[in-house]
Image (cartoon, rainbow, N blue to C red; front, side, top):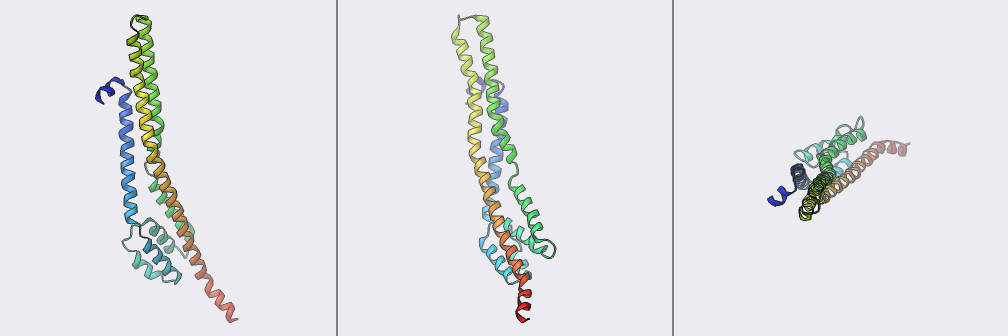
Length: 210
């Protein structure tokens, strides 16, 4: 591998940097989603919604204490601001959570785009050098020219390899963000419906008495 790296020329060094950056982001995001999976608590979410249906807001505070579930954080934000603007509070909290989930994704996207371009750039430089050699030595040594072109193609292969191996985790992480956004929307809407129902109950009771 070291021999191939050296044969690839100077462009292999920025390609190495791209691969290390992409690998770092992939590892960091993988650990992030593992932590989020461990912190998830479906039972607690259902319990919070059940208490909200009863209007027992005080009990919710005790139930969610210490929870690191992102859905719980968003619901709590809505509950705390229910007298003012529950929807806007949850939208703001959800935006922060989505931003946290998309962290470093733009860097990974850049590496996927830049690596193949660097590979092509290295190949073009190598081919230029090969044709310069061809012009100076003629066709007396064609092996040297073809060997130079073969070496130049190493950078293209390296760039494409980095992009291909990075695009799979990139798409996976994006799908996790989309699924999380749908989950947030689902439970935020459920809380909104529960709160509106509670707000209208006294009005309905008064109408019944009238």
